[in-house]
Length: 464
Image 1 (cartoon, rainbow, N blue to C red):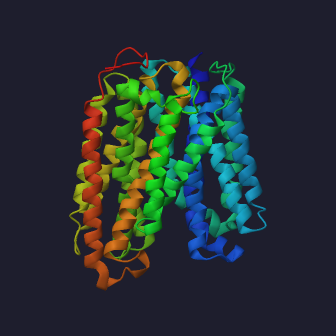
Image 2: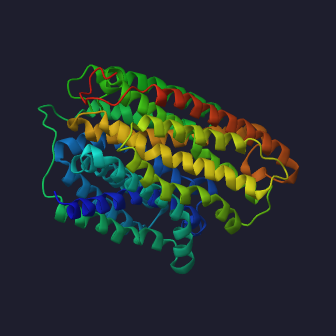
Image 3: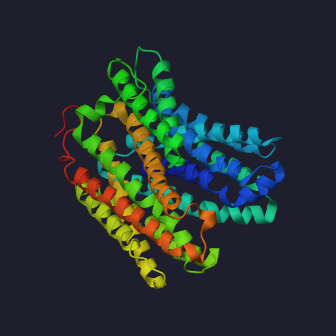
């Protein structure tokens, strides 16, 4: 395959990677207008964001297995079509429940895009070029996450909330056409077994209970749901280990040391960094008395550095063992989060900007090289499984990070709606406890990252 064709396929896969965080975050500033249109409460509006993240985490695993069966190219194009149709129909949603259902449908589409995009890039690019491709692909995820709220607010202000969904249609088409036109060969993973329906249902139930429980902590029912979800996930792993053709090849976690420890590092890294944006935003607009626009300029340091440095870090991981880059990245993120624990009532803005630089650079050094390590540690027939696990670890890590932050807010402050000057000391205590805990996750992740094993032959079995 010539360089031009590879670049066009990378462009298509990167647009697909861009769509998932964009769809998840663009709706944030449009929520008040959606609430007025459908006459729903603020609590119910929260489901517009939550249900998309939850459905995405649930669909990722079965989507990885289905893409093996029907082919990577067909799965990618199917995902693009589902996104285009779901977002297009969202414009005409007659009631709020239909809009939520279409959000779930869009999550199914983006699951196929995320799974197959990374798997296709792993086939198209040889190992010595793969990190650079992953770097560009991952940078688009960061750009989508940071541009989503800004673009969503702009479109809502000019044209109304329906424009947020309408703009997704041409983007989905742009993701599909180059892949359809230039990726000529179909890729399937041969298997004589049927789709594991029981395992899929068990995984979906476990993931729903665990993620919904974590996202609503520390309510007593949430704790029970989280524990139930964890127990069901243990049963799911036990069940999948007994099957010759499972929906998720969990044996990789027990037979492939480099894959397993790289995956754990991903979970812990996102658990460390994701909630920091939430706390910094609250701090700047409450204790710092900044407007939303001013706060956004400070926070923008982080995604800007990620977008610029991630492709560079990915390319660097093609030349040296990703373990070194990833470990440094996690340490930088941990330092940045620990510095946030030192925020006080009169902290200078440049101090906060420095923390965002640390976290942004750390995240950039981590993401693409770690993905390169994960995808490079498995044989070709496991590419869809590995890419699914990369995405699941990211989603679960983000939920864990937000669960830590929201639990601290609930315990020390009572809720974000109670955040006034009288509660600033309690808020700072919640921030301090959360950031120290999140930094601790990163330090554990450093151990997994450093001792993941050397890069070697990719057999997927007993790698040391």
